[in-house]
Length: 97
Image: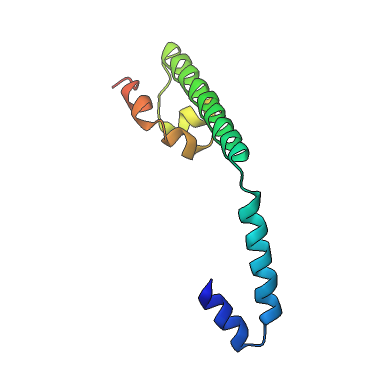
């Protein structure tokens, strides 16, 4: 932040720095323990839902003898490829070799 302050002063943008600094302070004050806990809880819930979708999709694909890949599981479970990639070990473990 110190470097930004110096750059703003060099280019006659002291007002810009002041505004940026105020916004940063406002953001830091807005972070509360309650919000942090709510975010953690929401993230955990989303992860659990994704895991259940992936597990159900893998089981269905095994039942119907479909090829199980990260891509196919992601598509079947309607989650992103990156989300399915987080459960790569589970998916690979359940592939029919």
